[in-house]
Image (tube, rainbow, N blue to C red; front, top):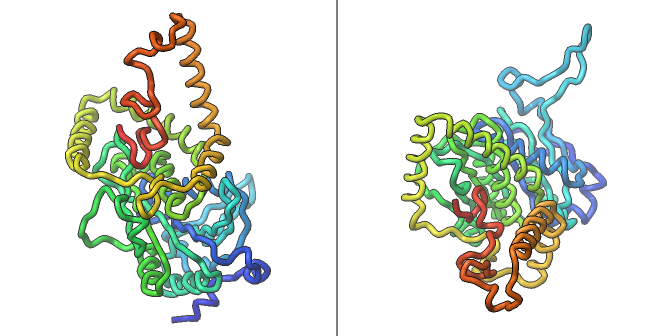
Length: 356
């Protein structure tokens, strides 16, 4: 095998800086088996919403089969321009609370997998990476009307127990992320992966709810606040379009109903761990909860839900009040911890741990 160190170029200033050492590393590769275009959406969401800078670049010319995945360029009247060369890069990002982390992404290599994984392992050692968390997606016979399922794997039981909705024993076609996880585990590096389950009938289209789930699980594993607002909004629009198409076809409604029945039967006895619960089943401490609350309050989602709640309260007050608080409180009132409590983050369809 050729020297792995010659496969990438590392920014010398950043490499010598203590600011990039000891960070968590997220990873995702586009190409093979990217159901719902999950990794592409995760990549775009991070690059468009978070501050980042380049740490290392890989020599894609040695790793990519151009004839299998031909690069794009633009023809303008009488000349070519805008050649989009394939890239595999490592960037440093800052999450919603300013916490730094690393993100390795790009086309999945076609060639030299062992050399590529050895090169990533050398980078992990050089930068003293504390945890590697990666994500990919597969098509599954599951309905879009149920929470997005995930299969978690790796060598950190505290980060994967109680997460998986599907625990098979099966031979599968490998992706480079699988080999990377194996080699990292062999080297004693903490690594966890998440396979996002995408409804098989939506595997060829962008499915934002699956990308939201991917970001939430990556964030939970690496203790990061990652952006999801734009994807949530896009997901609501996509779900409306899917609902219209389903309603227009009795055959499609029957297929979805069958998938729902099988899903409910399979998951009826499965209890998945909330992403708010820590590794030892304890709730986060005050500092961790405070950071999460601050991130939530700063998001457009919080403003929307607050406005909706205030609007509902205003309508109730306009309907009339007896002046007696005890009399005004009926059996249909919403209690924070009661059976009619307002839905929280984990209760919304399409989010991990949510209900349909």
